[in-house]
Every structure is written in C-alpha cells, then in structure tokens.
Length: 48
Image (cartoon, rainbow, N blue to C red; front, side, top):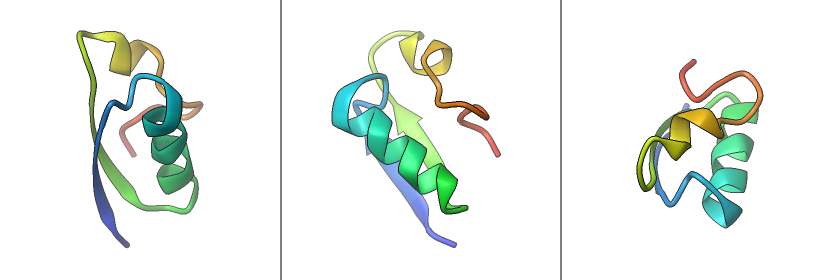
C-alpha cells in the first residue's frame, strides 16, 4: 500500500488522482483550498 500526499485535491487532476489512488486501495492525504476538499470528496469519502 502506498500513501499519497496530494495537493489541489478539491478539483481537476488532483481530485481524479485522489479517486484513483483510493480505488486501488492506497491511502491518501489530500489538501486543497478551504473546506471544499471534504465536500467534494470522491464516492466513499477521503478517509478509509
């Protein structure tokens, strides 16, 4: 299992990368501007 540190995870490429990493069972530490990261989390949430 890999741990990813992803910035810009609230939209665009960062959000897609976050979703892909979570889908393959990796852990993700995601950052973005404001509280939008948590509200725009991929299905299943950011925390697994």
